[in-house]
Image 1 (cartoon, rainbow, N blue to C red):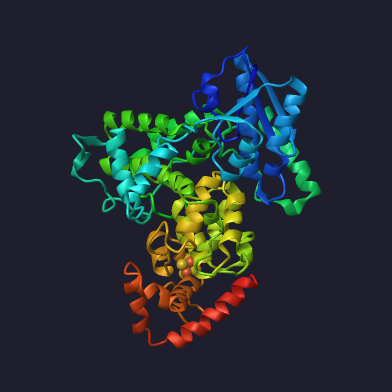
Image 2 (cartoon, rainbow, N blue to C red):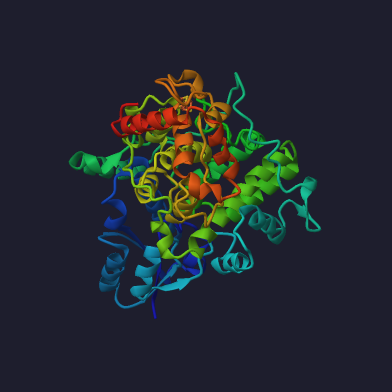
Length: 502
Ligand code: SF4
């Protein structure tokens, strides 16, 4: 029976998924640009542009290799498959298992055959076997096991350098007067321009469906661009990745980050290629073990763990709202001018410009603010999915529901990542240029994060007091002689943030 290989938009790798065994002349290729994926949400222009342009470039590369490629637009992926079968006749349609629950269910119902999803280093079964052997799903335990299983930075089962973790050497605040390396810039080609013109046309007709700036060369959309980004990271940023991985300097949006997540999450780069390149570069010397370990942890630890968590919890996990948070998304998430909080405004401005900020502004500014202001987790999750260039469903569901806003009753993280202005003040230079004072919790110039942090602990005092990981922070409430004033100021802050007036 003839065969069609369905290439999903996050499976853009010739050596992985169903494409691995595909042969030009024998197998047809199908890519479906579905309306369900591209419309009906308020997409950041660059996120949408990157997804579509990367897929069209990949389709062109397969064509150049000799495949007959059917790249079609359709209402849904399943509809596109039906139209493909109508045109080319009955045939087996094969794809790699989808990376989101919804698409997986639709493809299964449509009778599409699947091969295992090998876009990660850990299969879903492997993760499940580990998860079932654990009392709690502690990321650090998973990561250490990964190091041994994959043989990375270990010898005889022991960690290189005598420690699994070099956090004490990493996570420094931004250095003063530092000059950061400039990230690469990519020239758009004909396909990039065509995709952007289509999006701009739709944006003109429906401006409310889009936000963010047009692409400005920060992101490439090809395998060659992905490899160039990897090479640039290893040559110019890897050495200092670890020490400054948590720093939020105002004068550098990229700091020493790899900028590889968009490429990895659509399949243009595989984690095994990244890790092998990192290993080789580390062996050449000139990169500290702390930097190497910090990066390896992100790739073989955190990324794999998050994907495993997504598949471990059932489909209801996405809808959990354990803290009963029901506030609407604050205006500042769409419009940075709606706030005077320098941290939030700067981060959202960066997002408008590039559809990306690194993990600490995501967690400790955007998600922290969502947690402290009790924004509805699903509304916030939708915003994250539409905004970040690398926001796959499997990444965002655990990262937002479990880690960002602690909506899952602690199934993933045992305590909420809540912080006041002191953390932002330590790890960034936002506070210096802000009209608020990170140390103050009451008064007109009190830092909204600091006020809301104490109010958050106060509102959840009863539940958190039973959690030994946060009980100490909750006890701090007893030392606040001005708690009544904090409560009053918190009401004012929340009302003003809702009105886009603080
Ligand atoms: Fe953000 Fe508060 Fe610092 Fe202002 S003072 S930048 S609001 S943490």
